Length: 388
Image 1 (tube, helix red, strand yellow):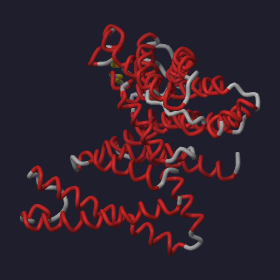
Image 2 (cartoon, one colour; image 1 turned 90 degrees about the vertical axis):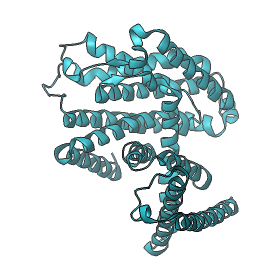
Image 3 (cartoon, helix red, strand yellow; image 1 turned 180 degrees about the vertical axis):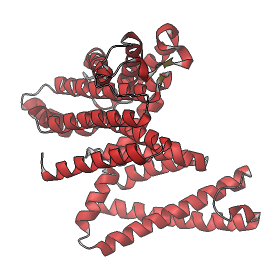
Image 4 (cartoon, helix red, strand yellow; image 1 turned 180 degrees about the horizontal axis):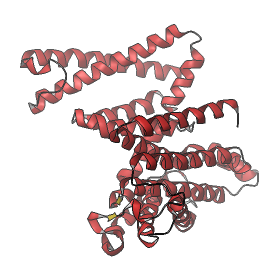
């Protein structure tokens, strides 16, 4: 490993150990959720970021692996194989990639995206048609302690489950990094950038896409098992369009060009779902706004934008001013949105002092903050258009 990679892995291990040893149960659960989403996002990055295959049904592999892993936990009760259960998810994901992947990867572009969308909806419908195996709307539950540990560890504790999730997340990360440096990894980039030239060079682009789909499905299966073990329940939501959309959003927001991107996106999504949603009902608006802004103004994602800013600004001054302006506009956007909610729904927001403002003051704040945000967006879009 390079010194940078060694430093990054060491920092990751140190932060994970620190959270497991000193964090409360809520923090440990948040960290576990982030790692599960990161593993899932890494599998999607291989499919979309490296091979250029926009899938709207990636949750099929994730969800099926989670369901089979939940049943495997019942079948293997008492066997000391707990640490190896993610291999069950990898196998299920690989089978899904072989069965579903071959026909859908014969097409690319919009056709591939639409077929995967329909495939996801078909599988989600089948889950409700066979409640004996999939549990219907209630889903399937399991207990982590039913399966014995190979190392004698008590996985009924959330901190030990976090450490196991972190270990398997590193396995997924190492797999993605290794594949990126192989001839197969180079072939996926060629298929993404110029499939016609890849065909002329002797590659069968459909087979390259299928191979990428197989590997991504296996890695998504690992993430599905980690999800089932972390939450001890699997429902039909695991294969839904909502889950497929979430992995797409977090990968794009974080950045499809770096393995760090899905981690940043996973942290963002987890904070939105578990923290911001407790503070305001407008969290979905903020989530959607960030996604639209990133796609429009920074298609390379947050990580790509940070790298570009670092290269562009040799000194800290300009970068600091840019960050300050962005944070200021984000604060004005929050004020505008929360004020609009208070005026429209009659519910006082949690912004300090806003409960004491009258209708006239609220309307003035709404108008002023809205105009400022609109002007900033217009300027940002103009500059983005000029850069192209």
